[in-house]
Image (cartoon, rainbow, N blue to C red; front, side):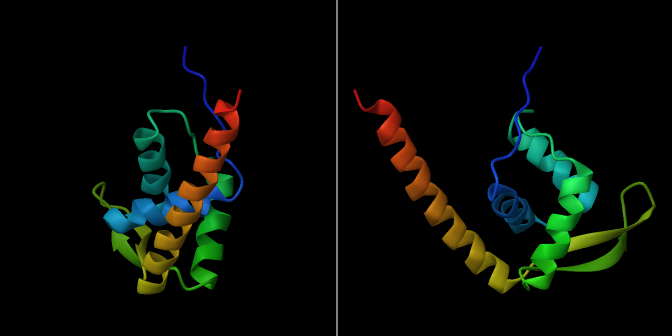
Length: 109
């Protein structure tokens, strides 16, 4: 039996941007990729993902267009913008710094 975890607040944006840095994807595919890459630790609720995608679009970090999926269905595909790539780099730096600090604290005796 595998335990799943909630994604820490503020990290879903970064994970979505990372997934989209690999290739344009539709919403369901983004959630699946996060789940696969996290080895099933993170399960992204579609009710959380779509508002996140909307927010990222409003910030200019991603754009979307309609395409046909591998199942021959019409879906909205999301693509990382140059501004989104810049944001991803900054988010990765911040995450690295914060997670390093948490690890230092946890290792303190």
